[in-house]
Image 1 (cartoon, rainbow, N blue to C red):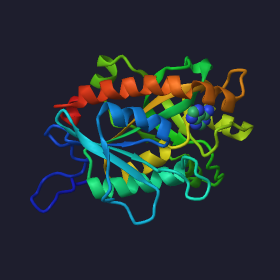
Image 2 (tube, helix red, strand yellow; image 1 turned 90 degrees about the vertical axis):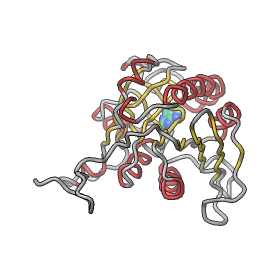
Image 3 (cartoon, rainbow, N blue to C red; image 1 turned 180 degrees about the vertical axis):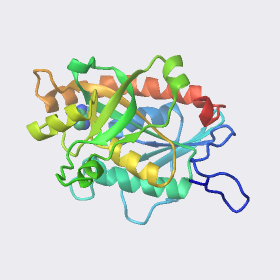
Image 4 (cartoon, rainbow, N blue to C red; image 1 turned 120 degrees about the horizontal axis):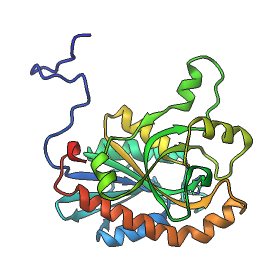
Length: 263
Ligand code: ADE
């Protein structure tokens, strides 16, 4: 196939990677408990002039940290029930709206996840996901089956992973905290080490809008362990969030001053 060219004759067959330092980062973080320590760490302020439509609960914190414009976007509280709007629907919407409004150089989806001890995960581990896919979109018709799984790769960051000594694993996403036998089969087929409720949705939107994305997931509960997931998740949420924030800060410090191709 002949290479695609823009109107100046530049090859745009591949997503072009800017050769300038990363300047704007968007964090997509589903829960307030996960976002708040990072908002404080980077000394971000909540935006009052929203770039989002009137009336949505979505929250943007922004500010300058070192040479970076950092934005933390959360879906906010469900307008009826008052709980964090976790899951793929809100995650897709805020990822789309944030990329449209802020044109970031990089999206980072950070949050907590369930981990599989059979794949080496322990409570408090922070994973950099290499690949993401859905485990609860079962469409047993040829090709639709692959669409449902929706596998995507994270932006390649070998230097970041090596330098920060982050664990690498595949991430599987679904809209439930628990795991039914159907989901388990799909998670095993996805070869996942960690399981969350947003990652593959963020990846879908970032891919549509040609925006590089990475995933940082901290393990709050062992899915293939013997404790009930909600109990283990809630017990570990605060401590594991501290580990996530520490890792996210190291990632941001590493990114500062670098091009995407250096990550
Ligand atoms: N977030 C934290 N733990 C999780 C789990 N077990 N499944 C999905 N998302 C999670």
